[in-house]
Structure formats: C-alpha cells, structure tokens
Length: 324
Length: 287
Image 1: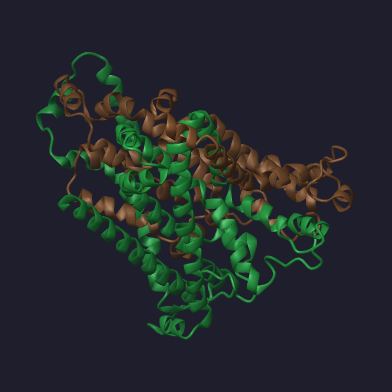
Image 2: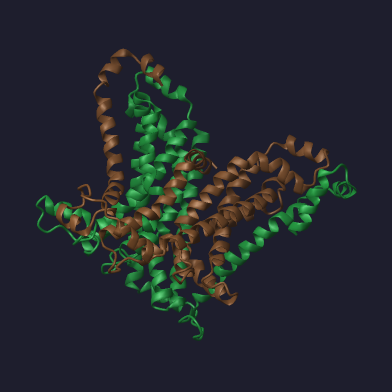
C-alpha cells in the first residue's frame, strides 16, 4: 500500500496526470478516506479489541495459564470476589489513591498555580514563576520506577536517608515507614502527592494564560485582593481544565501500578494493595488467570463509571453556566 | 509586568511589601521540599558506604566515589538497557504519531461515517487498565513468536498512544481551514498529496508535541515492559532498575547512582524540548 502511495506522490510532482484527473471525477464521499483509517482500525482491533474480549472470556474460566485446561465456570470468579477480603481492601485503598493523586494535588495545584501566576509572577517577574513551576514539575518527568527506587531507599528503615537524619537528630526509634501496616499507606500517599503535584500546576498555569488579563486588572483596580481574585476569577475561569485534571488523575489513580510495585508490592499485610496489583498477583504469581481477569474487568468497570460521572458533572456545570 | 505593579494603587503596594516576600519564601520552600530527594540522590550517588555511615546522607561526599556508578553500570549492562529504551520509545513515537495522523485525517478531514463512535472507542481505550489486556497480549505475543521481543512492546504502545493521539489530532483537524483544502483540490491534488503537502506542514507543531509525549510516556512505562520483556537483554531502564531492588549489591551509592543515570536521559530530553512540551500540555488540556 505504501509503495503505491509513494508512486502517486512522485507522479503528482510532474505536471497534470491522467490518473489524478480520473480520480478527481469520482470525488469526495467519506468512503474514499476509509483506507486512511484502515491501519489504525485493524491495529486497534488486534491490540485492544481482541485482547479485551479475550480477557472477558478468561474471567468466566478457571485457568492456571500455559498448557493447563480452560474450565468454564460461569460467574464463579465474580461470585468469589464478593467474599474476597483482599479484593475489597484493594478497592478501599483506591480511595486513598484518589485522595493522594487527585484531591490533594488538584487543591494544592490550584493554589500554587494561582500564587505563581497571579501574585509572584506579577511581583517578581514571570521568570521566577517559571523557574518555580519547573521545579514543581520535575518529579513528573522521571520514570515512576526510578522515583520508586529512590524513595524506597530514602524511606528504608535501617539504612534510609530519612531515618539516618532522624537518628542524628536524636529520634531513637524512627518509624519503619514502608514496612509497617499503619504507616505504609500514608507514606505511599505522600510519595504520590510528590509525584503528581507538578501536573495540575503546569496545566492550571497554562490555563490562566488563556484568561483575559483585563479581568484581573479590573479586579485589582477595584481593590480586590489575591484571595478575592482567586475565588471570583481564577476558579471559575479554569473550570474546564480542572475537570480535565480531575478526570485524567482519577483514571490514573484507579489504574496505579508502578509506584505500588516498586514501593511496597501491596504490603505489608495488604495495607497498600491496589486492584491493578491484585490482578497482576493473580495472573503471574498465583497463576489464577481467570480470577485476575475478573479483577481487571471489575476495575475497568469502576474506571468507566468514575469517568462517566465526572463527564456528566462537567456537562452539567457547563449547562448551568449557559443558563446563568 | 512592571507596569502592573506601578499602576496598582500605591497604598496597596506598600501594604504588600513584606507579604510578597513571605509568599515567595513559601513557594520556594515547596520547591525545596520537592527537589530535596533529587539533591539527596546526587549527594549520595558518589559517596562511599563508609562515608555514608560516618557522615550521614546530608553531608557532601569527602571524596568522589564512583564505584557505585560502575557497579550499577556493569551489573545491569546499562548501555544495552539505554539502547533498548531509546529504540522502543523512538519507534513508538514515530509510528504512534504516524498512525494518529492517518486516523485523524480520515476522522477530522474525511469525516468518515461513525467517527463519533470511533473516537469514543479510542477514548475508552485510553482508560482501560493495562491489566485487562495483558494476559491475552502475552499469550498472543507468544503464539506469533514475539515473546520477549521489543516489537511486541512497540506494537502495543503504538496502538495505545495513538488512541490518545487520534483523539487529540482529530479535534485539531476538525477545525482545519476549509479554504486550504478546497484550493488543493482545485489544483488537482490527490488525498494523499493533501495529507502530506497541505495538512502535514500545518499540523507539524502539534505532531512534534505528540512525538515528544509518546517518547516520554513510553520511556516511563513500566507494567507492559515488565511483563513482556522477560530477559535481561531486552529490558528497558525502568524495568532493569526495579528488578535490582532487594539485590545484595544495591548499597546506597549503587542505588543512587543507578537512579541518577536512569533519570538523566528523561531530564535531558525534557530540558531540550521544554518549550514545546509546555505548549503540548496546554494543547492536551483544552483539547
């Protein structure tokens, strides 16, 4: 296909060509564009469509992977999930993931972006604001596995940097941050906030550039302080971006795998177990492929519902604005 | 900026004279807290284990200790992993952008029937947890002889990234100036010509942003490479680094030097393309 296409391209460089003229006569219905969609559509079906359908089929089977027999068990896997304490724990932990990856970063991000853009940028010049923005964004660009390995060492109970510092400050028995069921989850959440914070800051700052500066100037002349401008201009004006951030981060929080894998592997005692990691465990550790597939499917459903709710909320808020 | 300050009422300016420094200190403190782990990493990447246990993590190294770096470098065969990561990420960046452009051309300019359904499916695909695809993909790769091959990862990520790319580009091309297309049609240009000689030059900035995104996203991917690339010689940098965890050899300098060299490529890439990237994040945000 590509060689043919290249030929066409070569011939059109030379003056009028009969083939082209003929083609132009039978012109444009959308059908003629289908060949351009074909590679993408085929690839999509092969890499996403078929595997997803297969995964649903797996979830109705008992299968240990490899050459072992596939046994059709209907809804048994899903029924078992209902009574699986670890399954429920993993989804409860997803709420913590949403707090750490969506709620806290979005709130802090709004505040930081507004302070950088509407306050520091004006008082100290935009250069200082962009330097600060870049430093907030740095954790976002490093591979999550690298971040995990780094934090794992910093937080290591015996040899880690944090506890070394605490001991030198006279703390006798510093906590085993990632190793104890009570502290593991809050610690993981802190690391995730650190990873995530730059994303909303960058998005919100670029959103603020879209806002008409006269709005801010007029408000300033009217004597509105930063706080008032934040509530009356910043928040309503960048609502569309806020929805985008909340949507993408919620999906990411529900899907989170890498940080858990490198920081805690779901432990200790399942205190940081998340659905994606639980599914992975069933697939590759416990060889319960059907069960892992069922977990993954429930997770898919939860993600789609959460995304749907956010999109509905967005549509509703846009409509309200249209009326008001 | 400067005029802003001058035009503000003088009273207000004086009132905020000290407050602004407080706010600046606050913002800088946040930056310091975020950068601290990086600083600690750099400090300890070149510090000998003895130095570490004597002086702790916050001191400057007493001498430049490079054994951590060399241990890591040789242990994971870093050049090999670097090549694997570069090859996979570049291939996905190029192929994924190309596929996105072809899809978006048919959807945004060709306005093919059912395009809303196609875009919704693609968008849905970006939300799928990779766990819901991985086991079938794993067995499929085995059955076509692509198990443990970088190509399996390249093909998968080309499709996954282009799902997002199509969504973004289709809405960009949906607003493509009609006049340009009509003029090209009058000149007798074929659809293929229009794509490469009219559309491509106009959307090139967006395409380059997409390429950078695809490169970094693929570079940072963890789960699919972890499952698909099972031997040492095919692994990417993040997988290699993570698989060393718990290894006896991973003392403080080795861990830190490993993390340091593993993030250098990403940071370099980021610095080179920072301007394009910031623009790209914006493009993604407002669609």
